[in-house]
Image (cartoon, rainbow, N blue to C red; front, top):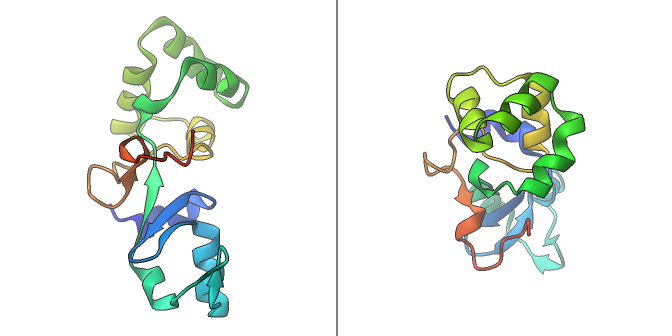
Length: 136
């Protein structure tokens, strides 16, 4: 799967633009739409916007506190399964078998978790490997 196939699901995520640095996906879209010379206060060549990767989080990056804050946004069955069993394995299994509930997926994507193996496919950057994780 390519990022372009699911990009609309990750509006607001941070991205790394080749030869530019880190910007939000919203700023990239704005730069493309309006051919804007400035993005985030820096001079921006719109053609470089086509050479970017989103910065996403692996499910393993989820903390207990973060999961607790998501419980109200998720399906009860998922919360129970994640509480009884290993949360990471439950979520990875549901993602891998395409059995993740829509509501659960929305809650995870709002927090920029990689639900489409974009990191593994080289289509996204693992936020946990960056010196300055933009989501911490």
